[in-house]
Length: 197
Image (cartoon, rainbow, N blue to C red; front, side, top):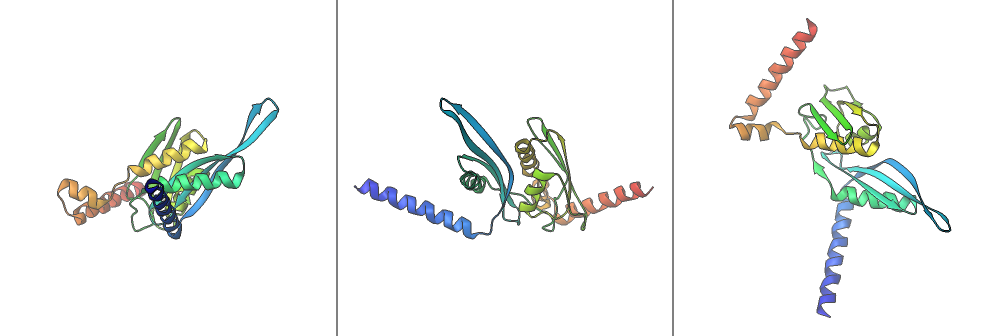
């Protein structure tokens, strides 16, 4: 009897945790939905597979996939999985990446480049969904290889996982954050001078 009581309390705790997560303002985007058919003796059983990207628009993002007989249920399952797989990405000034990055998954390869203010989100469908839920406002991205939304999203997440911020780099090298940032500024000025020439 006591064991049943403990299980009940644990379940309530999980429910409360889910409610608290929902209170945090998450934005979710449906990236892809597929209708799948299972052929059985009596005919075909149709189901749906959904790919959803979830983020708080403040530097956290995750993706999930769900399968069910009905579309809303598949989307709900995908959203729950996405909330469990959130990653934190450091953003520069809360609008773009700190540095360029490449990500791979299967045949999918993506190239992400940080951009100056006012550029906007220049990216394809599945990648755009990831950036908008993450809260990035300025970025240039290109998908090379596959156009499969699942692989594009996974490759994008792979590239975002490799992002580091100046504070982490400074701590590794035993330098000050201001030194790292000043080096980046001089490198950008040199690059713009080369472009102008």
